[in-house]
Amino acid sequence: MRIQHIIPILFALLFFTSCFEEDNRVTPHVPGDELTVELNFSIYDTMQYFDCSSNQVVRAYGNKEWNLGFETARDGWHILLNSAPNYYIRHTGSSDFDALTTIPDGYEWIFDRPDGDPDSTAIDKWVNFTETDTSYTNEVILLGRYDGINYSVIKKFTFTYVDAYNYEFRFSNLDGSEDINFSIEKDTTVQYIYFSIADEGSIVPQIAKTDWDLLFCQYSTILFDDDGTPTPYSVRGVLLNSFGVEVAVDTTMTFAEITLADIENLDYSNRIDIIGWDWKSFEGAVGKGDYVVNLDINYFIRDFAGYYYKLRFINYYNALGQKGYPVFEYQQL
Figure 1 (tube, rainbow, N blue to C red):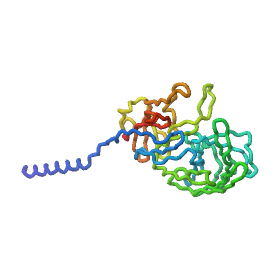
Figure 2: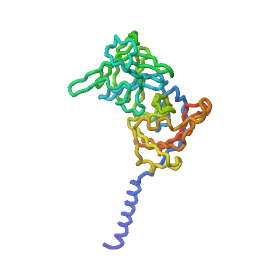
Figure 3: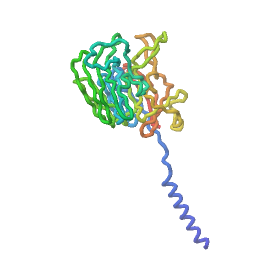
Figure 4: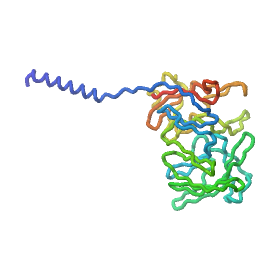
C-alpha cells in the first residue's frame, strides 16, 4: 500500500478513537452545596422527620400524636412504644382482661431500648410462631405516662392477632370502661403504622419509609446519676431511619476538608441512636448554664440511594436564643 493511502487512514482512526474516549469519559463527581439548617419546631415537643436529599422536614408530629407503632412487614409483629411524651409500658402477667382493674405488683414501668433493636421492645413477644401454629399470650399490658414523680395508667391492652395483612387488639380504661376492639391493616410502604388511642382509636398517617433519613425528637434512655445508678431519662437528639440509611462517626477530621474519598470505606451502622443526643452537653449550674455543641463530631450519612453526606451540629439554640432548635450544617459529597 502506498504511503499516501496510509496517512488518511491513520488520521481517521485517531479521530474516531478521540470521539469514543470523549463519549465514554466519566463525569467528574461534583459535591453539593454546603447547607445550614435550623429546625422550625422545638425538639422538646415535636418529632421532625428530615430528608437530606430534599433538604427539608417532610413530616412533623406532636409528641403525643401517637402511642404505638405496628410493624408493617408481611412477617412483622413487633409493636413500638412512643417514648417522646414519657409513655411507659407495664406488664401484668395476667391474661384476664376483664378481671384486671388495678396495677399489679412485681413489674416495673419500662420503655423500648433506644438502639432500635426490635427484639428489645417494651411490649416484647406477645405472639409465638412455630412451623405449624401461631399462639398468643393474651397478656394484659398497661400503657402509662410518667409525670416526673408518678406513673399513671392511660389504657390497658391485649394483642390478640397478627398475620401478613392485619393486627387485632383490644384496649380500654383500667376499670374496663370505653372498651374498644380495633384492627389495623398493614401498609408496607411505611415501616410502622402509628396508632393513637384518641377518639376510640385512630391511625396517624405516616410517611413512606424511603422518604426520610433522620428523626429529631425526644426519647427515653438510661443514664447514670452521680452515684452510678442507672436512671430512666428523657433526652433530645436524633434517631436514624434504619430502613436503608446508615451512619459513620468521626472526631479526627476537619469538617470543611472532608471529601467523599475520606469516608466511603468507614464503618457504617444502622443502629438508630448512633447519632443520639450527646453531640451536645450542658455546662454551668442548673437553671443558669447553657447547652454547648461539640463541633468536633462529624457524622457521615449514607442514604437509600447510596449518596453520602457529611453533617455536624453547630448550635442547639435558634436565632431567638430558644433552646431545643438544633442547627446543623451538611453537604452531599
